[in-house]
Amino acid sequence: MRIEGKLALDRTDKRILAALERNARISFAALGRQINLSRTAVQDRVTRLEADGVIRGYRAEIAEEAGGLMHALLFVEIAVRPCEPALQWLASLEGVCEVFSLSGEVDAVARCVIASPEALAGLNDRVRSSDMISSSRSHIILNHR
Image 1 (cartoon, rainbow, N blue to C red):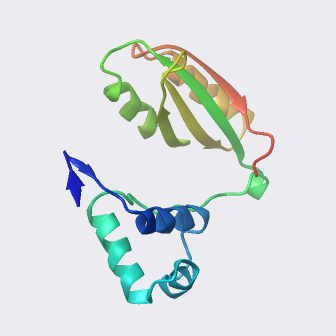
Image 2 (cartoon, rainbow, N blue to C red):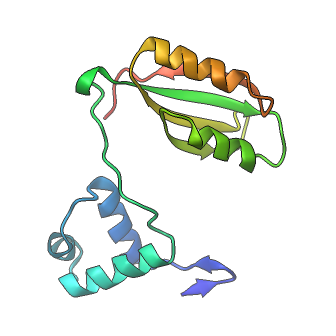
C-alpha cells in the first residue's frame, strides 16, 4: 500500500525486514515461526517488498579477519549539488560496498573493503582527485560487532 508516493509498512513488514537484516539467509519457514506467520504469508510479503523496491538485494557480510581484507570508512564532503552524481560515482568505485548520504558536516560515508593499506591510499587519492569531492578522510575499522 502506498501513501503519497511512499510505501506504507506495517508492523509485520518491519519485523520481517529487521529479521532479514540480522540474517538474510533465514528460511521463510523459520522467519514465519519467528513472527507467527505461515511460510507462504512470509514469502508473499518478502516478494512484495522486493517488487516494491524495499528489499533491494542480499549481501554477504565479510569478517574483518577474512583473507587479509581491510574494512574502512571514507567520510566525504561533496563539492557539487545536487549530490546524487557524486554519490553514484562513489558507489561505483572498486572497493566501495555501500554509500550513505548524511545530514550534517559530512555529506557521505562510504563503507569499503580493500586488500591493503596501499589499496586504501589509492582509493583515497582517487576520491580526493575528483572535482565532485571537496574533502575526504578514511578510518580503518578495527572491530565490528
